[in-house]
Length: 116
Image: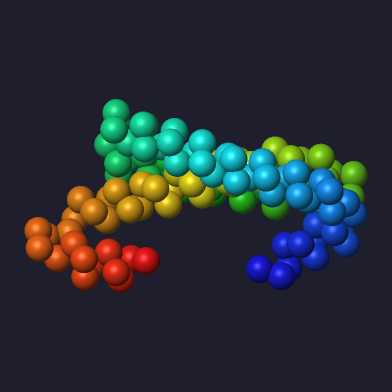
């Protein structure tokens, strides 16, 4: 948790203001991603939509690995971080939906307590 901000401020030399804007964009993208992937899950099935959210997460991690190596490539942060928010919001919402579909009747409280 500590290494991300240190990498962004020291290696990529991005100002605190731009970090705040990027964080806000990520939060908004997380909310949008949750709604997008739940809607997709209703159309194609929650398991497939969850797999697509994880695929988006993997693609974004590879993009970050290859695009964010030097200071002059910091502009890619504004693409990859909101994309990560979209994948994160979608995968969290869909994971709950898939988990809920597998719970036997009568054990909802106990098992959702473990999920949280």
